[in-house]
Length: 450
Ligand SMILES: [Zn+2]
Image 1 (cartoon, helix red, strand yellow):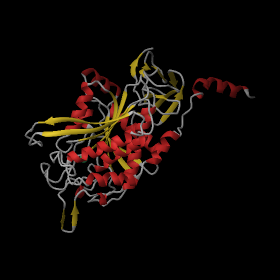
Image 2 (cartoon, helix red, strand yellow):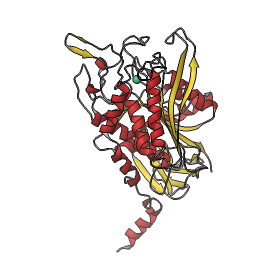
Image 3 (tube, helix red, strand yellow):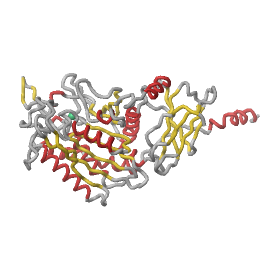
Image 4 (spheres, protein in one colour):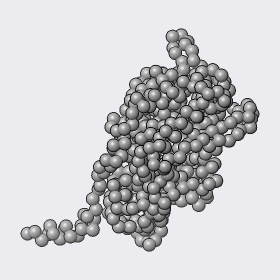
């Protein structure tokens, strides 16, 4: 009587061993998420605002006012955190001089990106993960270097987040390197980010991801009157930067226009953030940035690095790029009192979870390939171990071709897997997984034969 059932089970055995995986929080990351503090973020923003203006064109010699003093203060915070990092954190200001460009720079200007580098502990791991905000601020006229420009939310929020991430994360160690950076010159045309992206390219950094945080601490819009601190946006470009003809042909043939590296990073950001941060939904926006605006991720995207922009769900344009004034009873200006520091806490914790999970994970698997030797209704994938990191196993990810994010996750400790789902009907990708369950960025398979 039992025989048919046994036979049925046996016939299904190769596939019945494959089970979808559910993932627990890594306690190491969960603990750090709990240490991100709204009070601490508020004090960072208040201090940034106290410099009066942080216009890139403002004074660099005054000790208490202007962009020079604000850069020195951020450097001093990074140096303070370096003391708790056992020699692994180094803080510097990457400086250069700009000549007038006939656009948004009208005189010789001393520039500086303030950076803290938390060196990875694995000498074989050259991966770098970057998190950024821009320290400069502006009022209505971008050439105005004198008026008060508090820049509490734009981009005191992103700058404070970077400082807070450094505070919490520098007490820990990670196999890969994390760089915390606050750039100058965003409002003058993404100048600091362009300088850094060019340097990363020139120095051949193995830069795996940039999370750019710009305007993420206010919960309301000025026109639609929405108030919401439970959602945040991540903007990403779908196509990979630096396309070649053969890459473009590959994208067209296999339908990969929604699977560029920045889009993958956006999916990863959504999944990991929602794993660790309660009461926060990450809304993926399938475009590089908003209308009429730009951001510091773009110089990286255009050089082929995976990079995304993190921005609040609803923007209040009365409090961005505005001269400080009251008109018809409406108060204009980017002050801290218009922000929601509990929301900024969640958005900072979101960054922390993603950066930590990336830097703890092994490098991505190599030579990921989907087998196309013959016509079948199943999918065989194979790959090689990553260049660095201890691997417990791999996740094979799967989604419908029309679905925005990965739907199924299968674990294996082998370097290949066959699934009873047709490669014609789904997208697949592979991630390497650490002993603690931290997964690498996913790799889309190329087409090939074993
Ligand atoms: Zn900004």
